[in-house]
Amino acid sequence: MIIDFIVAILWSLSPFGEAKVGIPYGMLKGLNVYWVFLFCFLANVLVFPMMMFFLERINRYLTKWTFYKKSALFVARKAKTGSGDKIKKYGFFGLVLFVMIPLPGTGVYAGSIAAYLFKIEKRKAFWANTIGIFISSAIIWSVTLASMKTM
Image (cartoon, rainbow, N blue to C red; front, side, top):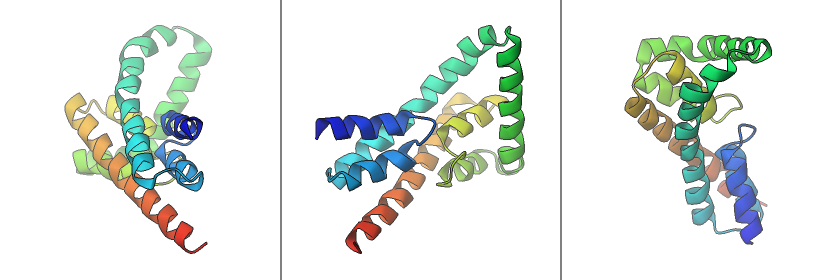
């Protein structure tokens, strides 16, 4: 049981799943649906400060390497084209909308990169990401719960 909670939390921290995978994983493993929501949501929120630390400190050092720099520029272009119009037009709410969409590539990792690239104030970016994560997590939680009841 503890292992399943840990795996759900790790999925929520992972860029390959975030809470979009952690919540259904934990619920389908038979864990308490409310605790799963809470722990996976909070784990996903923790990604933002980790990403900002990485982008502000470590990213600058790593851009000295050609391979990393090319990869980082590729990701930056993707983030700007995928979310740029919404964030430029709607600012805070555009970032919330972008992060809340429960699809791959639209979570807190991409939201953090977009906030960094568009130089959104950290406090506003944190709250936009948190609200977006909460809405996305609530959608995933509700859909998973509803599908479990029909099984």
